Amino acid sequence: MSVLEIDHISVRFGGHLAVSDASLQVEGGRISGLIGPNGAGKTTTFNAVCGVVTPSSGRIRLDGRDISRMGTHQRARLGIGRTFQRLEVFASLTVRENVQVGLEIRRSWSRRRAALPQYLADGGDPSPREEVDLILERLDLAPLADTIVGSLPTGHARLVELGRALAARPSILLLDEPASGLDDNETDAFGDLLDRLQLATALDEESV
Image (cartoon, rainbow, N blue to C red; front, top):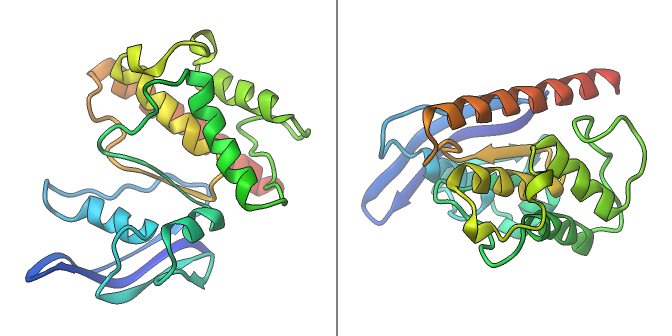
């Protein structure tokens, strides 16, 4: 079953048609790409999935549930995570504090904790601090845990943004041009990291 289904959505801004009759399905445990030239509507489609904009037509479903008219906070609580084309981090906070924000947001909306993803640990029930440490370790950010994010180069800041999103334990994670601002080596390393996370997630789903 598809985790995310976009069914014939269109998005208009006044007289401008930004997204026209777009449909796609995203399976769990996989990396799927949304490819197109600048101005094709990729970010607008992501914004429609997250609830930043409301489609003028069509439906969006998460795990079979129609979320087309839900607010952004409701969709986040249901498991939609997001990083941004324009880097969004708390520049005045440390790496650890940025990732911890994801845990605090999750804890504020539910007493029920989602299962710990396989890419973090093989079972167990880590404390919030232990979970942050696990995320930092998986993203090779542990040596920078107490560094102010505003002093980091873009490559490391992109990892911090990813770590904060993972801390909310999303069921689907939208990465909007995650390699923007990275050089070729950083882009290759980021791709390898995503492959490792995806592989662990796929193995986790097979074990359920």
